[in-house]
Image 1 (cartoon, helix red, strand yellow):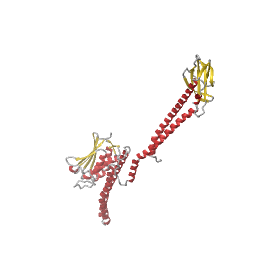
Image 2: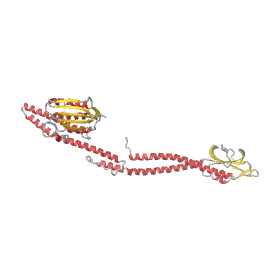
Image 3: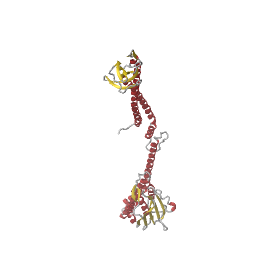
Image 4: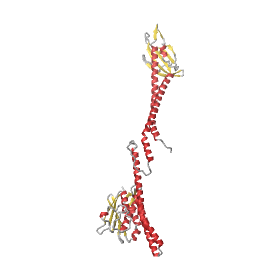
Length: 462
């Protein structure tokens, strides 16, 4: 698709309506020019007819007329129009005699009353004429009157109308041209702030994420700059999240990799099969822990604000919890743990991301299994609490001291004195997922005998 000029588009949007108005006004001007030329022609015809009527006289019972030169000279416009006249003596409405002129010149269809004038159009000798007829009483002639008809061809009239119309059209076209020039320069000046913004964007260094100032811009451009600044802020948070992920991954993987390298070197140097098997078993365990850590780091990166677009599908929390517990069965069996599921409802529909909800439950259950001694009990429950679903994970482990419950949601924070293996990311991931879903998470004692109760409230589907 060809690039289109904003300046040209704005100019066209301004000039096209103006041109439409000019076209409409041109039509009106044309009609006005026709009317003006008609008025001028009619007045000339009437003046000529009255001038002739004044010369119609009765002398000794006979009617005669002297055509004054001025009556015909007023039609001399240089367009060689032909002028015809007819003067008849009338007795009532009946023609008596032709006094002068062309006897076959068309008369008006309507009866001309004395001292009245009638304008009309007719064809005569193959040419259109504009005519006027007046009826003049004859002094000394009794009831007799004179009918004076005078007509003129329409060459001068048409030229006058065309001249008036063309002159108006040229004036309006010149006006449109002047407006276009001023609008073009106005747009040139008005778009300068936008062009300066473009230059500011192009001159930015790749790592410069400062917001753009909108103070010098017109109010119509400020929403564009605001949207651009919002995008820059999202991009900045995304880059910071990626940097945190890289830093966290480098920090958390450095020690396990060093241990793996040491254990692999020990296994290579060892000549005792039992020691070699022991080293390989340790390597296998650390590799498994590193895979879990890498998965948690990726999950944390995804659940961070702006880490990825949050889905709002309709999911069943009971079904998600059941699949999450099934994935933790082998972990529970390996530690001789009793992993139970006790939902109070058959289904719990809610808007959310099924993958992230699965990770939420997996992390909470994994955290409970790691910190609960062998032969312990971990129970997951779901119940209806009004406008929310309540997800609980209860264990009979050592619990978390009340003074440290606010800090365990920090990344990589681990309770002092706890020897269980872990990265300190499980609860941090759970907190990010719950916040993203619009819910809350809280820690409490599981009972008088100890243990930890994690309570998560998640909003129901509308």
